[in-house]
Amino acid sequence: MAAAAMALIPDRPTVPYSTAIPGGLRPHTWVKMEGSVPETSTGFRVKFVYGQYEGANVALLFHPRFEGSAHIVFNSLVERKWGQEERKENSPLRKGKSFTLMFTTTTKAYEVTVNGRHHYKFRHRLPPERVRFLEVDGDVKLEAVSWEGGGSYWNRLTAVPAWGASRVY
Image (cartoon, rainbow, N blue to C red; front, top):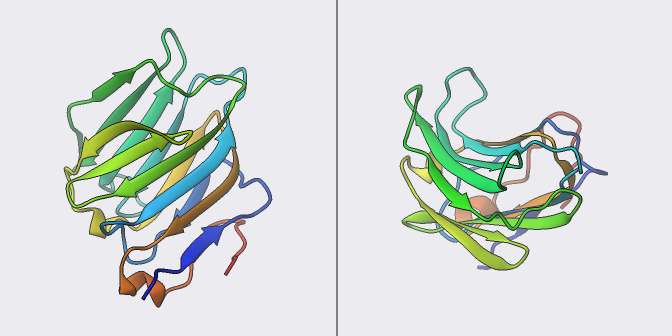
């Protein structure tokens, strides 16, 4: 049975943005974000989190930074402690430019694609199946956020949008 795409596509989702991810992230699931980086941006954060409370585990932090040389920091928050940062120099994300980000979950890692090109592989430090929310904050404009599940569990669910998002089936 093919997985059904579940998309949250309000008119330009407001940042900070938060939405539930029903069933967690399983192998072959992906989350796609389309947007742009304002000229004045110092950076933004995309977080895949276990809960919406202070100190919740962060399975993946994707943090593009534009001060100094443009780079992206990857990390995880486990039991209220940040792990070792992984830093990728020469970010393909640019101020004033549009982007498409794709986060694909595999059995071993998150594979991050920027504008259709493989950019980075971040190995799992926490089980992705326990991720329940996607959060985006910082200096970024979102146009659309969507995802598709790889397992039958996702096929039985509908998206549960967080503040201000509309449902698209």
